[in-house]
Image 1 (tube, rainbow, N blue to C red):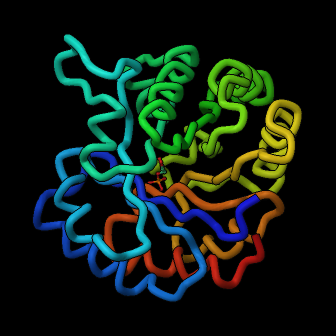
Image 2: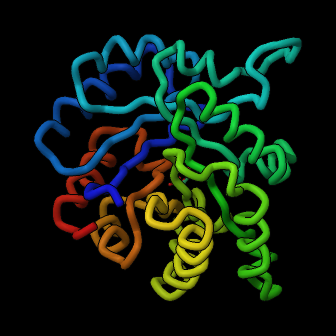
Image 3: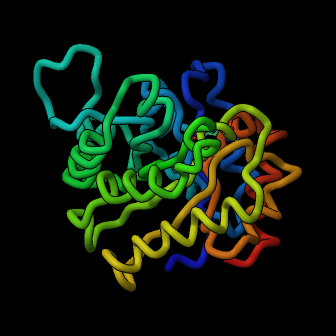
Length: 249
Ligand SMILES: O=C(CO)COP(=O)(O)O
C-alpha cells in the first residue's frame, strides 16, 4: 500500500489556457507536502499543462479514454494519445460517463485494459445513485460495479478505485462516515480477494472540500480524494492537499 494519500483534481469540462497558472501555483505550493497530487484537466490542456508542470512532482491524467488504441472513432481520445499528451493516469467509469454517456461496466473494464496497455494508471469510479440508495440497493449496485468493472484482468497492475456516491457529486452532500465505511469495507473485500497484497488505493469523491477533507482522509481505508468543484481554484484546493499532512494513511 502506498504511504501517501492521492489527492486528485477532476476539472471536468472546465479550464482554458488562462487556467494554466492555477496548475503552476498548485505545483509550487505542494512542494514538500506529503500528498501525491494529480491533476485531470480537459484533454485540450494536457500538453500545455505537461510543459507547465515539468520538473514538478504533480501527476497529470485524462478524464476518460476509448477502449481502442486508434481508429475511426470521431470525437474520442485513446489512451496512447493521453500518454503522448503527457498523462500518466486516467479516470474511468466516472458517473458522468456511466450515466451521461450510458457507459456500462463492461466498457469501463475494456477501457481500463486500454489504459494499462498505454502505461496509464486508471482510477476506476463506482457509486450508487440516490434512487438506488433509497431503494436499499447500494451494496448490490456497488458489488456489481466492482465485479464487472474492476476485474481480475487488472491483477498485478497499478490502478486505483474511487467511491463516488452519485448523489454526493456537486451537491454539497457528503456521505456519512458509516456510509463511507460500509462501501469501503465492500471495496476492500473485493480488492483483497482478487488483488491480495497488491490491493490498490481507494479514494473517496463527492463534495470534498477544505472543511471536510481532513476528516474524510482520516477515515479508515480512505487512501485519497477525487475532488471536483473544489479543485478548480488554488484557494479551495490547497487546503485539501494540506489536509493529507494531518491524516494518517
Ligand atoms: O465528481 C467528482 C470528482 O470526480 C466530485 O465532484 P465534486 O467534488 O464537485 O462533488
